Length: 304
Image (cartoon, rainbow, N blue to C red; front, top):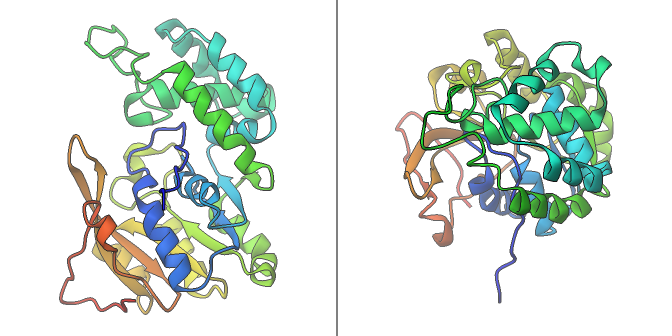
């Protein structure tokens, strides 16, 4: 059987979860959760939702994002893809544009500018800044003295093609602006009634404050864990592997993983998968190059 080609997110993120999507499919099937709605708060690049929609493993998705510019981007991909793509074609990828777009980072930007302006700005910063971080400096620096310049990750035709491919997948889906716990608290009755599955990839404990405008403080991590630990709907969480996080989710099933983000750099991260479901399946043979599982002696988990 020919493998299903899955679409790629147009957004760049440190620790993007494209590589984890195959595992998510195995997790859904192991717990008989496939075919349901996939809810992805803290969406960022939304790689998991896009991949699972593309493979028809889930029926629809709800993408929830707290950063106004990233929320606006996904809202435009769903509702105004043609106009957004035209704006991407026309924008000048220069330091001058980068400076002009700084106004969209202000706290009152959602009140002052259109959703298309904000969506373009979010996409622009993601593709031109270091590591895709919205509030970072541009690739090549302000002087553009590096061999890598501000436009080196802004391949317009290829990125527009991704948006055109993804947009139809979101027709039955929702894009929501909001905080993860606030959204889940408000909608948990519907989530339970409709049997939806929630996947949360929060700002990580150790590095989150360096990467995101809306990072978590200790109280936010505790709030999320407290809510999930008592939730009656199925959920899966990915987190960085550290004692603080392990303590938050005592009593839940945990699987440490080594997740390889890039083949070229062979960069790996020590992370955790956590769930309230019965099974956290072991990576299959086709995933061994991406995942290498090591079992700390203090942890136990159930394998499929």
